[in-house]
Length: 132
Image (cartoon, rainbow, N blue to C red):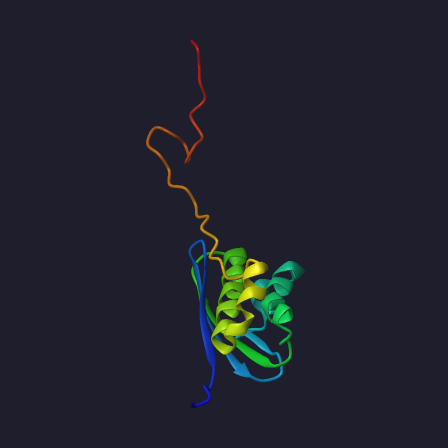
């Protein structure tokens, strides 16, 4: 079997989509041409969530991660990247499935914004009731 040049996975969250590629390397992460701190800002929780699948798999320093993300906001994109990295790790090594599955990293989060309903101000907020 021919060794792949890279492993890939697509992660999604809300309206954000992240196309992730894992190359053999030293653990460098690039999101849309920037470092995670530049792209997601100084919020530490996003940096930790990005590398969580790699830490669980024990492969923190073995792959360089290249991400192309689009749509959604900062939090949605960060979690989409995490989902994509987990899927790409599965592409690299299928034996990691139970570990990643137990941590809940392979499940696509189905929660999305609920649509606005007619007669209401938002999805569920009704106009103020006036008796007289």
